[in-house]
Amino acid sequence: MANQVEFKLIKPLFDQLQKERFVTIATVDHETSGPNISAISWVLAKDEETIFFAVDNRSRIAENIKANSHAVINLIANESTYSISGNAAIKQERLEDVPLKLALIEIKITEVRDVMFYGSKITAEPQYDKTYDKDAAARLDKQVMDSMKKA
Image 1 (cartoon, rainbow, N blue to C red):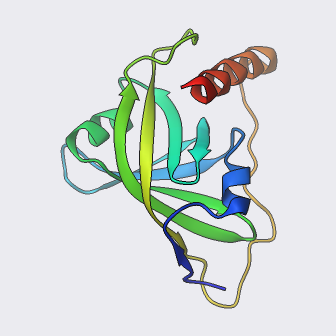
Image 2 (cartoon, one colour):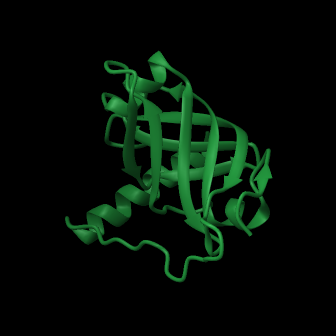
Image 3 (cartoon, rainbow, N blue to C red):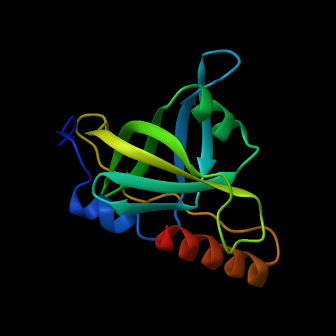
């Protein structure tokens, strides 16, 4: 059913955010003050009220969050589409034990809203393939997710 509102992650969403997955994040652009949407995959629910994600520490996402903490993650899971709103902050400028310069960003959840349009459900979730060295990608993904779990 559409338009359900919670103030923390429900169990199916928490469970889906225990592994790398495709989500989009909306931030307020630090130059235009307009919306900015990016796709990310290194995302982890630390608990029902907190989401961590990792991005290049020089990315537009990081710059946007430094200027305005409002952020929304769009998650397709549990046969629906969810808008997870909250206040974001750079938790670590450089994620430990990872060869890339990745920032760890924390979102404190203020609202979880089912935004699927009425009378429908998701029948297939987004899938993607890494287009570079599969072994290198798997190693890096493990390093990033392990580091976020330790944070």
